[in-house]
Length: 219
Image (tube, rainbow, N blue to C red):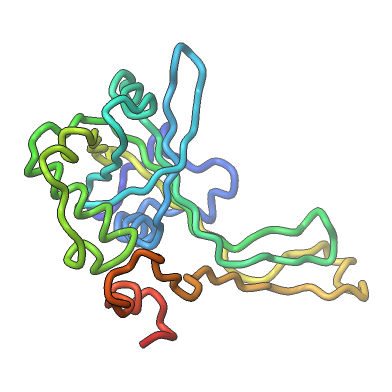
């Protein structure tokens, strides 16, 4: 199927016209993000934590320490919820009420599975590292056995998801278009600044290709 089935779980109610359940769109937004917000519950109290992630087909991987409360708790509930939001700009209207933002967001639901094999754990850590900075994995030392043993990795299969996207200009009340107030879109672009070399860097090494790729002005 090219779409996620619309259910009571993933159905977008508010601003439904901005919703899409297209898998390609959902995956593109996930792949464009670096940090997701993972929900979990401890003793009936909800928590949300930001964390790096990586996607492999219909699975999202997250990682942390073996004693991570968020990861342990995620394994104890039927489903977790993961959210990713990309801000594309501010939408400045003529009235305070109609100010908004242009954005792309995804909400994912799925059960969490503890990754136990070293092979899959390495694949997951590769996916996370490459999602954070493309090309970095091949530049660094891979995790050793001690590090793998100290790392807990969860695989969350994307069982249900929806995306919500806003684009375009502000929408004002008809009478407000006559106001002498500037209105429009203020595009937002995130990017990396100039790299700062570690003071303990050996032999004044040049900035690595993955960093140069992320900072296009260094090319």
